[in-house]
Amino acid sequence: MVVGLLLPLLVVVAGCGGGGKSCPSYVLEPAISNDPGDVFRQCGPVDIVIVMDTSGSMDDEAEGLCESLDGIISELTGFGLTELRLLKWGITQDGTSDQFSGTGEFACLTDNVRDVFGDPEVPGIPGRLLDESESDEDWGHAVAIVSEYGSDGDYPNFQWRADAIRIIIPISDEGPDLGSPPDTPDDTAAITNAISFAKANGVIVAPIIAAEAEPETAEHGRRLAEETGGMAVRSTDQSITMGQLIYDIVFVACGGTLDQPAAPGSPGSTMLVTAGRDGGVYSLNTSTGSASLIVGTPISGGGTGEVLTHVSSLVYNEEVSRLWAGTGGQADNYGSIYRIDASGLATFLADDTDEADAIAGLTQHRATRSIFGMEGDHDDVLAINNLTGTALEFADSIGDINESGNALTFVGDRLYLASGEELLELDTFSGEPTKVADLTLTGFPSSTDVDFNIISMTTRPSDNTVFAILMDQENSGKNTYLCTINLSTGLVTNIGPTGPRVGGIAWVPVGYFNSN
Image 1 (tube, rainbow, N blue to C red):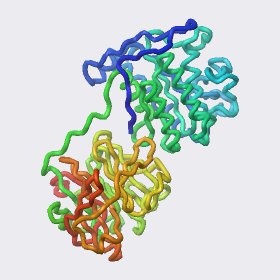
Image 2 (image 1 turned 60 degrees about the vertical axis):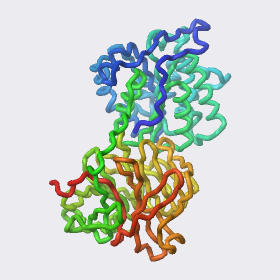
Image 3 (image 1 turned 90 degrees about the horizontal axis):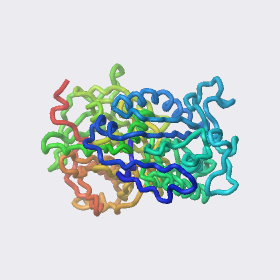
Image 4 (image 1 turned 60 degrees about the horizontal axis):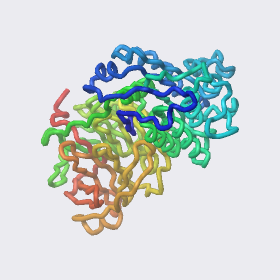
């Protein structure tokens, strides 16, 4: 998933040129089209320095980086970016360091910032050095060093080319000053200092923040990107390789545009479906709320005959054109993802119980096709691989949120959460929630006003109307209603009772359950 795009087409270098420093001379014009060949052919020289945190928690990101870089470099040059220089460094260690020698870890990191610049002092912070044993996570300071000393003729091991677009890509899961915790005054100062020297030397900074990072780390990365004209990305979508993230960063730096808005669906081209507690698949009448059985046999696991009776969430995954289901905490197969085919056959995809007892709130961004979910009855946000179904915790303890409900839906680029009796918006980069409104009810039986949960939400593709399933807790959760939610006011309007007790809801193409 790519988030946080901010890129100026004309880079103005404030304060550059003093002290014999080399300054970038390029003026990047808008690409004549968004075709990769057009974007990269007009781009000119590009210098990229990857600066990677080499702490133990970064093994997966390092493996992904090393496995995918050669292919991405070939792809970039094949599209016409022929003047590309890409350097892969650690901060104080690299693939040849003693602790990594012979292990293959961080093998593609050919050097490190500390050695390239000869044990340098961090510019702007007198006396602050990169300590070999403690500074392997000092990515904020590394950005300042590479930005400043790469423009200073006193450091022959690396100099930015004067006519090149200059990009630094720090990769980390910890704070920018000595790692954890990421919310100290020194972390904020490190980012402020890095911004100053990046801007002074015409450097675009595009951090890749690991999915497991704390929200404060994500915010540091976003601030650094926004202030230097770059983009910040977070490696939450496991189906996107580290190399693809770097490709996207370069594509945007060269004037391309990512994440074109998905076209709205045509009215009547989709139908609203739900899963019942009896294992049936039902269509929902959007005028009355009533549920009608559309699959004659219960949803059952392939080869096991196991009926999925506790489907807590559904999403139509446009990446693979199949309906997916997340199972709830009361199911025998709890915390799992299944694919539901046209016949109602449920094929097991992933056991996500390491991350969640229940998979609630499945929803997909229609442009990027990134899938998010919630850990049922808790406040952890999950990123779901849109090919395999495996879940990765994206943000935990996202706020002081009532733990009941946890329904999610995308409306355009905005991710909404109904939790308890509150409607919130979730930041898809940090996972932080912002309250939108209190949920208030209209048109329901009076008993429903006392205790209710929004257990699932979905957005109609043709007009962005948000539909939801409300469960009346006053009757042991046996009554469920189809309703709509006003995203400005939080007003929940009853359409009608569903009849059978149901769980997740999703829009699927008309005819999906008649296809093979």
